[in-house]
Image (cartoon, rainbow, N blue to C red; front, side):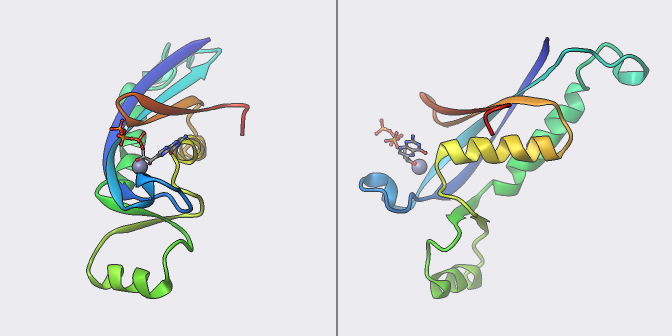
Length: 142
Ligand SMILES: Nc1nc2c(c(=O)[nH]1)N=C([C@H](O)[C@H](O)COP(=O)(O)OP(=O)(O)OP(=O)(O)O)CN2
Ligand SMILES: [Zn+2]
């Protein structure tokens, strides 16, 4: 088994719905996303011969995904009143609406699924919410 690992980070705001503690309040993180690809065989020919995939392409794909959320407010769909959403939009804030509670576990699954949809052989995604706290989502556990 061959593996390839890269990472990308983004800054965003969020809050946890139905959380009883400080995380129920709007706050921010610098989320660090670490992605690991895995394949049994390397590519056989061409510019990517003997590679899992080109690092440049892997980094570009992951960075594009983190860039989508960078400096946005990640909001769980339905967690704010429609008029609140309207006001935030009218104020010009960038909202990233997600169909899930914005836990680091769900964000790890989100990035795993987006990488899978991009056609890369993703095995594991780790998302660090703080330097010490990380959630992991792995192939075969979806
Ligand atoms: N299993 C999970 N637990 C928590 C999550 C989560 O996504 N999954 N998220 C949060 C909050 O988002 C919160 O921002 C993180 O809280 P905390 O660990 O307390 O982070 P701090 O940086 O504030 O830690 P301090 O040690 O207090 O500085 C909570 N739990
Ligand atoms: Zn948080």
